[in-house]
Length: 67
Image (cartoon, rainbow, N blue to C red; front, side, top):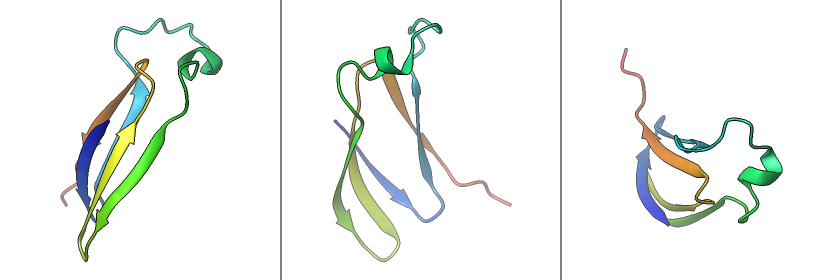
């Protein structure tokens, strides 16, 4: 499980891992189970969550765009 903290307008990306065959079906990608997101703490400007996903998927932090 990956534990991340996110602020307002920050995101996470969940996508196929780099070493995965691009011809895999969704059924193949999720053959080891679903994505599970658990909220551990929520404050005024930040949330702490855990993300558990099949090994065929990778999870990345994405920061908010600065304008």
